[in-house]
Length: 148
Picture 1 (tube, rainbow, N blue to C red):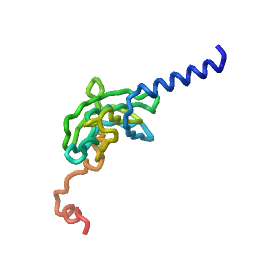
Picture 2 (cartoon, helix red, strand yellow; picture 1 turned 180 degrees about the vertical axis):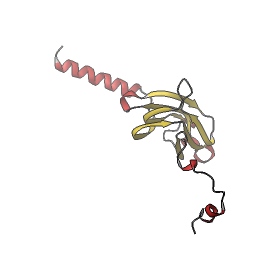
Picture 3 (cartoon, helix red, strand yellow; picture 1 turned 30 degrees about the vertical axis):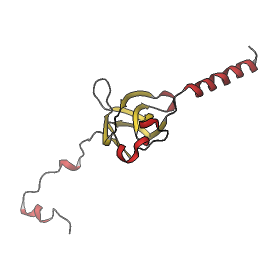
Picture 4 (cartoon, rainbow, N blue to C red; picture 1 turned 135 degrees about the vertical axis):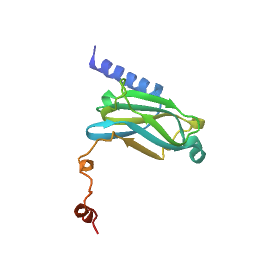
């Protein structure tokens, strides 16, 4: 094939993909190292935002934009408050990832823009060495247990 024909085919394929794809608002969170993530919480309020409130959300995880995989897709009907989305693998273990993408696939009343008032990402709680100190029971220890 001639190079100009290949270039034209690529342009046609890109234009077709752009015109037939769903337009989604998306937000990403990237970390410098692979992080264990247990839960994702999104705050949405239909009474305040109406058509800006998401009705269908897709959560995708991966190492970068090129290998994102959808792990959850949920539909919401007039949400009010926190929406808790567990991010677990097939064996119910928290996932390890570099990147999380939240894509809003649809809004209530066919709105175009979206409002997610707050997003929280939770990691599993690990025991630290701070909690392993012995309890202060003697008078000498109790005298110095607080800082004035």
